[in-house]
Length: 232
Image (cartoon, rainbow, N blue to C red; front, top):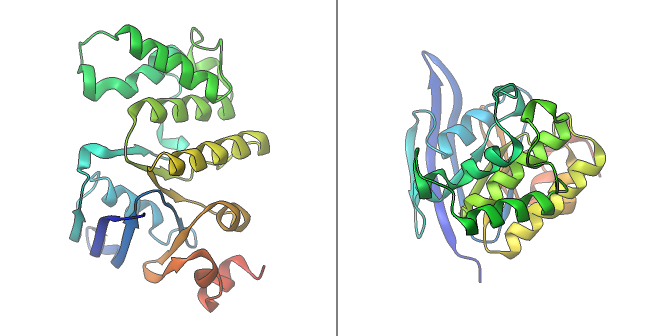
């Protein structure tokens, strides 16, 4: 049975005197995939950054059965430094930061979990490579492996498939579905109607203020959503 675990109440985000997001209301359930859609510049990224506590906001985000430590966040690829001199394995092992701290050592079971995660995302044998050697799709797979070892209850992704090849996108969408089966919840900013309709449970359409929140079918029937995504 799905339970409501996060309640977003009148959440607004402003930068100086410019309001990016105004009064968003929704609930996030366990074992649920929620897509965040809308036009470019409509406030989607601002909303998810507020959701994970990265930026200040007005309103309330109330958690029931989870805390802020249960959230994992993957920002847009363009905001991640791919030239930092660490190996793929070290990148994935950073997912255990909350367990071992800044100077703690990786335990044998953690090494096994990292290698298993790399195998599951199709990067078996890539652990010793530098992250700068990876293609965009390979790097995103490695970041998803890091999310896996974090074992967070709520996973927030900002445009995870932008610039990704079709096979990488399909593989990572399957991985997201497996997280739902593990009673995790995913919030993802997306642009592709087909990805949303074929894989997600609910949608919130944000265009400065909230346009619609509900099932995928209901949201895509709304005129404002048609204006961006068109018909079926």
